[in-house]
Length: 276
Ligand code: NDP
Image (tube, rainbow, N blue to C red; front, side):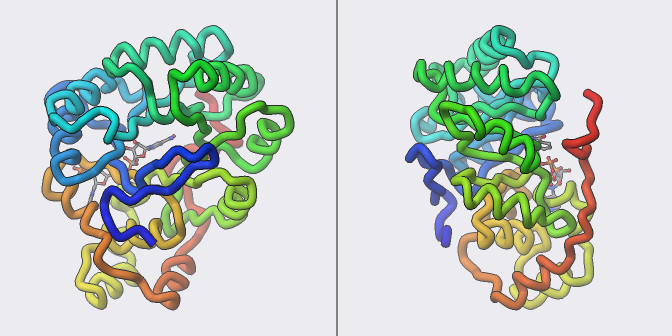
């Protein structure tokens, strides 16, 4: 059970990835994202999740440099966007991300969405980047079981991570079991459901019982399910709040109550029916 902000899961290739990271979707390029990254690193976060699509990779890179924390202590994730999928275009997209971030290597490179007819070629490009040593681990995002099976069928390198929407309204049990059985680390995006679950009566009750905030209850639930979590905030107070989750434990009964909130409700697009 993670007990410290820098505690890590060990990915299927032996690389360590922190259980907690900062998400930066919708953090504005420039001072806002730079400030969020610096504030997170100062708090003790050692993982940052960005993407080409977020258009803030430059700021993430600047925040890392200005923080003074050694590069090798930080785990940086970025993703190839849908319009850039395909073999050559992914290699090019990676180079653009790397240049914008101003980093020698990336820790984790993900396929952002399973674009039909494209994602297998994209995976080959990720394998090449991995074998050439530009990226320490490769993975996918928004992949359903059938997408994973399709990749696993003939890949040379197995995906290390699947980053998907995951919170108490969408517990993705079958997908989680499949990932666990295949050595793929599940990672939660929108772990707070962008705030939409925080006033649910069960969470409010647990908030009082544990003397923790609603966000802390939900993020702790991720950790106890062995799911990597990357809450987004640009507010230094909330960045700290979201990291203060290593000093308490939810009981098995309360974990089940949170699991029981599942209504298979997505706040983001369905990976089987998206058109972008
Ligand atoms: P989150 O569930 O992390 O919620 C973020 C929202 O909640 C923001 O509005 C934030 O506001 C607010 N918030 C943060 N902390 C608290 C708190 N303690 N109490 C109350 N409100 C709070 O949503 P995201 O969609 O941003 O998901 C997290 C990360 O996952 C993204 O930033 C991105 O890195 C990744 N992601 C990946 C996707 C994919 O397709 N792979 C899709 C979507 C997200 P404020 O900033 O003002 O604090």
